[in-house]
Amino acid sequence: MVQNGKDRGQQKEKFSFRSYITFYTRFPIPWWLFIASLVFSLINTEVFLAISKYVIQINKGELYNGVIIGYALLTVLNAAISMGSNICGEYGIQKVTLRARKLLWDKILHLPMREVERRQPSSLISGVVNDITQASAVIHMVFSTVASVYGFVRCCVEMARFNAKLSAYMLLLVPLAIGVFALVGQLQYRMMLRRYESLNTMTEFFSEHISAAKHVKAQAMEELETEEGLRAIDERYRADVYYAFMEVLQVFSNTLYTSIGSIAIALFGSDMIRKGQMPDTGINDFTTYKSRVDQYQAEVLTHYQTLKGTQGAMQYVGVLLDGPEEDPDAGYDLPEGQPEQDIVLDRVSFGYVPQQPVLHDLSLTIPAGKTTAMFSNWEQLRDIAVPGCLSFSCFMDYRDYPDTDRRLTDAALAWMAEEGPDFLFLYLGLTDCAGHDRGWMSPDYLDTLRGAWECIRRVAEASEGTYHLIVTADHGGHGRSHGTEEEEDMRIPILLRSADGAPLRPAASCGCLTDLAPTVCALMGLPAARDWEGTSLI
Image (cartoon, rainbow, N blue to C red):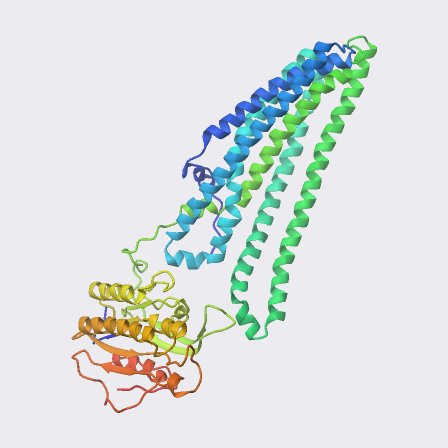
């Protein structure tokens, strides 16, 4: 419908530490699971220290029944407590991941459409699938770090009680360990960031291009697609190689520190044994505590590395959640001081699938202030609207709503009454569905056609005196198909009515689909594109 003479006057976000932290205040956290895991870990530390005392007795040859039974029972208890800690921690991780995914998905659904287009749907998919999986690591790592720090301190105290002098020598190595692990942590952050970006590249490429596979095959572009796909795969390969190298470096740093500690214990411990300052089994006994100290120290620094890696993987999620919310009533204001401008299309070729554009070299100027709307129940019709040219768009899937013709008509009439657009396109697609499913001119097809005609009657009555009205179809049909040059497929209705109710052309005159666009332009006072084949019917 054309209103009768009515005129109307990707940049990359920086990481935000605040967004990174506040992300975990946006949804309920199962604190009791993480606290339970922490308690189990703290108890586990005390159990291990008790086991260590039994180990020292065994090293000294004190193989009494009480020692052996106590050692066995505490070892079993240690395993059970570790299992409880792991169960609580892992279940908490999965609950956090589930809730974080729901949060991000809800946010994506409420983003303004322009924000969705700017970020690209494939990037948003990658956020839900890839980025958000890192959300679970932070809270778990925080609680694990507390447990590891407690274990480190307790073992250091027991180690000092066993031999304060040798313990002092070992503590001198702690700054070395912190320096090594801090360096590896920075490298791991870069490693995870690179892996994150390569994974997103793959997800975005394949989510977009696999959906267009039929068009690729139809235009014999498999070779080009293969090359582009291999580039995305190769980028992930290089990131994985870098990741593997960083893991090897991390293992090397752990081994280096442990070896230095073992050498120091052997040198200083043997000297103390010779001087009678430590029993003959002293090195083995001391190593029992030292190994646990090393373990907790490595856990603390590994948690730090993991948190750095998580920061790299999630650096845009917080920014996305802080983004704008959709406001259906707000519209889009022009920047302050910028006047409305004409929309100029100069030899534009466009298609949502790049390999299959539906507009070729289109040149057209849409004067400033014109408003347009489209209501349809066939998703492929999005291809007829160049982005930025629609003031409002409404799509209802006919597979979800059997009465979409009526629903769309209700929505179109309500929007027309409230907003008064200059041009409104309403597509009633259930007739086409009935033709394909039950056959053209079948009883069910004719019933559906009568429903569509009732919708047209309502639009005609509501628009009389305000809008010119054009009623047409994109094709006919025979059997359960169309697309041939047979009469049943080619003949379509074209009905034109002026705003005052008079016909716009003689009833006996002929027209075709290519004449509709020039006719609409004529009714709106717009020049037709120079390359169009049709001519105006008025």
